Length: 116
Image (cartoon, rainbow, N blue to C red; front, side, top):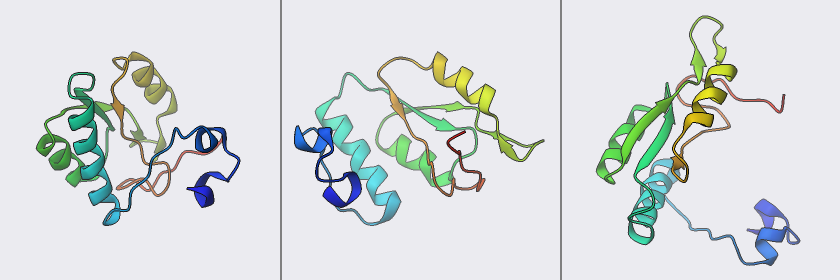
């Protein structure tokens, strides 16, 4: 965790971060969703995914017992991020739910957000 966050990161110093080793991203999502379901069974019910996401995400979310909702992400006309649509959809999300967003090498669109 020190490598990822830096030894002096407040969340690490205050013991607010947990980590686990998994088999690839698919394994990480499955285990993460299972942990959320076990330790917060009432609080979380929905997983919000980009309007284009890896097809296996749908299976993992359903297998773990969550409802999947989509938010706008990929603009097929510009072949880029639909930033205005995404921000509108994220603002309208139900509070306290799960947001699944891949910020690097977004699968399958290949369109990544930038700092701008």
